[in-house]
Length: 124
Image (cartoon, rainbow, N blue to C red; front, top):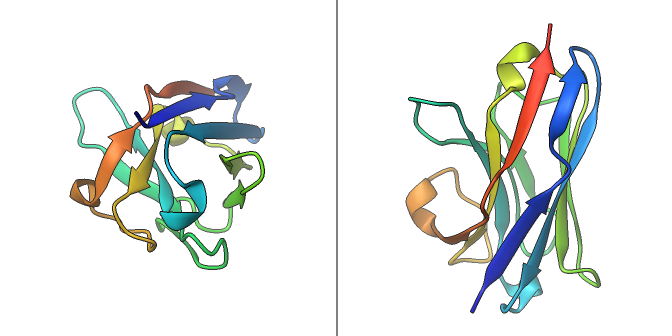
């Protein structure tokens, strides 16, 4: 049974920083890509950042590029999302997901396991 557990969300002022963590168990962590998505109430879940299994290839949505950094720690089976220069529009719930492939994708249908989500609130 694959489990993904996110942590690190919270309340922060605009311009501040947060680091989200996603701890994975039950799957050979180094074999599959991991990504972060976010979803606001009433909106579709959107891709934020992804990292391929080699931890070399990463990708970001245009809205977070230059502000967010995704990284991974194989030994800890954990993926991180460092979020800097936060804006109120960065506010929704963040989810991590593990892909069926070694390469990240922006398509939610390419992911088969999801965490429960962690809430980020950025106040203006």
